[in-house]
Length: 119
Picture 1 (cartoon, helix red, strand yellow):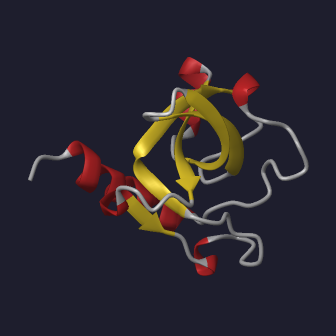
Picture 2 (picture 1 turned 180 degrees about the vertical axis):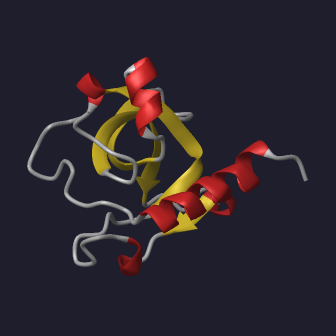
């Protein structure tokens, strides 16, 4: 499996309300079993958009293995997608960094609390 949980990759995301795709960094939040069984990665989009700030998970340099190469923007808890390996954009910035496991767990909990559970 070329990518692991926490890896930063680039993907074409369908942008809600705009009927087009845009390339954005994404954080892989799924584990190896998902890829082994389904051949997919579950990812959350990183974006500069200030819309829907309630869903924004702030990213900080200390959350990443390489603190100098952090994806710019915020992870948006409501913009989660599953992707095939063939959809990952291969270029010099692909797999340029990795979120530390403890912060991937915090991100997944944030997604669960803000998107999946009722108040």
